[in-house]
Amino acid sequence: MTEEIARGREGFGSLRAHDGIYIDKTAYLKDFMLRCASKPGEGDAESAVMLFTRPRRFGKTLTLSMLESFFALNYQNPGDTSRAHKLFEGLAISEDKEFCRLHLGQYPVISISLKEIEGSSFTRAMSEFFSLMRRLYDSFSFLSESKALTATDKILFQKMLDTAKITEFDAWLDSNNAGACQMIEDSLLDLTGFLEKVYGRKVIVLVDEYDVPLQKAKVGGYYQEMLEVVRGMFGKVFKTNKSLLLGVVTGCLRISRESIFTGINNFTVFSTFDVEYRDFIGFTKKETQALLKDQGLSAYEPMVMDWYDGYNFSGASMLCPWSVLMFCKRALRTPADQQVLPQNFWANTSGNDIIEICLKRRDARDSERLQNLLDGGTELIDFPEYTTYPELDEHSSLDTMLGMMLQTGYVTAVNVTPDKKVEVKIPNKEVWDCFEQKTRLIFGKENPQWLSAAYSLKDTLFLGDADKAQSVINTMLLNFVSVRDYSYESFYHGFLLGVLSITADSSLHLASNQESGKGFSDITLSHQLNKRAVIIELKKLSPDEEADALCAAALKQIEECRYAYPFEQKGYEIFKYGIAFLGKECRVVKGRRGD
Image 1 (tube, rainbow, N blue to C red):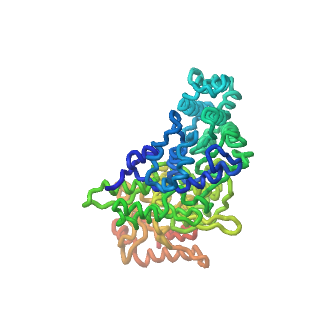
Image 2: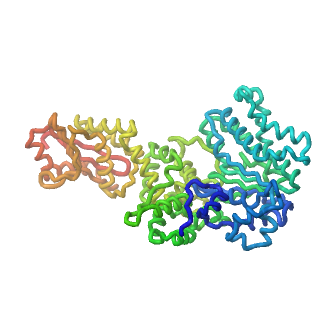
Image 3: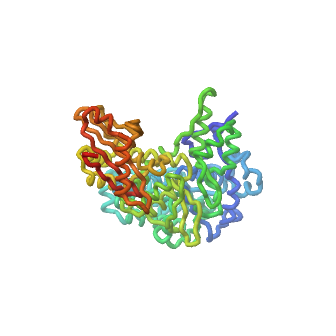
């Protein structure tokens, strides 16, 4: 019997309770404790805070949930670890009885996710921050009844809960900005202190999606204000906090240590470039093969690997758990007599705006580099060890955007050169499909600018203006990339055919490689109502060839092969063009009337 594949169930406890699929990563728990303590309550100031950066949808949230489920106390009955033992029954860590005796269900744990901290302004984002902290404090409301807390402790605890009574939050924040920010910065530090006082044990702090508030703040225009708050909160809870045993933080980006993790000496980053913990988050190829076998889906292994494999985490070939599990769920629900096809599950988990920004860049060299990636090639980029959130727009360098794509999963590292450049590629067909969807949007009718340029080219060709047609084509070529496997003249043929096809209507007939006269013309456009036709012959220019000479050869081919004959018979006015392409430029020459 197959285990339930629980879509959207990111809680470890819920997943295990419902017999959901869980790829066992619990053996790593022992290494976590080696970094900070050998026995409950014995903290080590060094290497006690860990940051894991991974692409989106790779299981970071589930990983933190697993840590919480293993380490967290039963707060109402600290001696009862029966539920925790049941959750981990049959998993690798359960085999180490002594480790489980010492650490399973033995620590207060604070777990928060910052993914909802966003807003159009700093005030709105802070409102979300307070809402998050109130929920966190409310989940520990029983602490306020403990005699271990002083009267001052209880006032501080209640103060956070009382922010829910503020009716005019915007006005309150404006008049108490410094104090409000201080409350958020102190919130986790205070809570760790309260928990240690009540339970006499040091605390584990888990923070998911740590970089999201800064990402949203960059978009909203309040980056510096949010940076100060997040840096203050992390600095206090993770730096020389005597109540802290272990801190684990996850996100997509390695934000500059100087900008956010200042002074946290016991801070260690584990990214996709680090061998240590490289297969801790995500599915390895071996784990995926075993999963498919367990689910009776081994026949689909080549398809799964083709579509979802390809991420390189410091030499480990990794797959996105979300995509693999969604494929399994879909395959198991498909009737036996129906074919199971791969699907892009990853695309709908984000807006993929960064792809759109890249594709809109008007830079010939950059579009050539993007084309190379789409054709399955690799590109070298400058990639700093740490990053800040740059203002990503059409003017950002392509290396900056590809660096962001590397951290969020749109490209993966192939190699790191001795001079610290990173060779990247698109990891698999699923991500390639994300690019395809965006290219159809950017280079199609849905993009008003592209559509306007296409109509301008069509009108220019029917007016016989070769110089303007050349200018329009060259402008459009600057940022055009194709998801099709074009080569030689075919790439330019496909480009021009795609541009003109979006202008076709009932009165305009567009044909490609249609038999005409003594051969097959590359592209023809004909207006039935006003009896005009355009005949285009394309050539790919070699570096040692003359553009005008090649255009002349194209026009000669039109004449010798009599491509215009069908239109001549109907009395059409005919415009003939020879177009030679080289890289991101073209030369357009119009045939003379008598040609």
